[in-house]
Length: 84
Image (cartoon, rainbow, N blue to C red; front, top):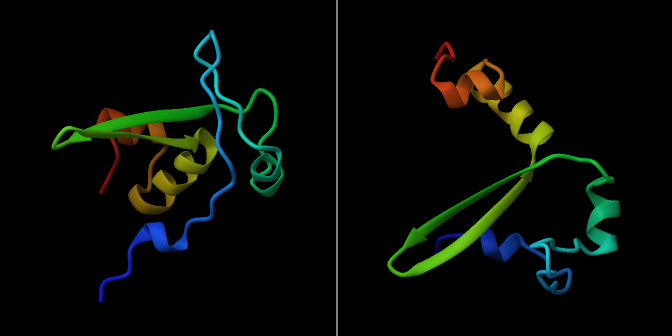
């Protein structure tokens, strides 16, 4: 049987979208992943067969992943200027 990414996830609670479109990240999660005021996040979304979802990742984490995988900075990877 195939392993799914969701099997490795932990539920940290729920949140509500505020009047300004903001969400609150639970304190336990902020502490675990060292999320602080002013941290920048990238928000991506996709649709498939009528379903949709959001993916939120710290910009510096994605930047490091891009460096490790593509050998370039995030902006270069997104612009298609990385050396592969």
